[in-house]
Length: 281
Image (cartoon, rainbow, N blue to C red):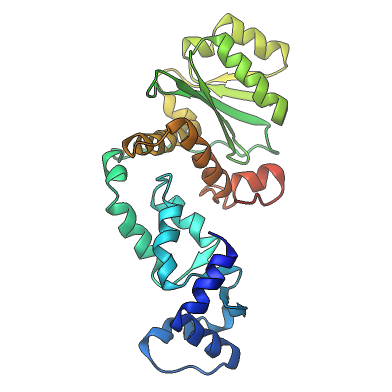
């Protein structure tokens, strides 16, 4: 959805054109549909045919369904979808429409999770990006592949690599690609799976000066950051399969959404914290 498309639709929307006149002349009718906007009139401005609330675009009625559809393509859930849209767009009742969309989404209902276990006290935030990372495997997915997930504890920025087998050598090769992009972390946290504690991967960590922190046996929830991400990723990819989409392509759309949506723990988008810039989406 482009600004030109929104501008064109807004120019044809009678209510939007009336609202633009109200904002520009500060004259407001008493009709019910204007009351919500009257309350926030000091936050409103116009640019050509587009209305802004702060830096968010007020979407005309005819385009709201399309906005919701785009935002929910990867089935991230109510909180993530609200966070994503609140950064960019506004219209009265947007939160309740998001909730209704997700409550009635067949794929979301089929992939809903059981009640959460008691939360674990979060670990202390690292001093800088890519200082401490978590690593885990999720899958298998259709075709037998797994996904290697590495998440930065500071920014919550995830990397995800599709792998055809889960050998330590394959994991090391993918880590080398990830580390070539972001650099070597000081500490990496994993569970006690055999391919995560093998002699080969232990030597790889030692040779690169990486401290290997293993979560407490029988308590994998201690790696909750990666585990929660894996659940969200798995839900999105299952929804893609149910919709007969190519999950190997959809994973990159999911990553774009996740990386550019403010994280509940930090209040900022992972990509913004990691790269110190806003990533265009």
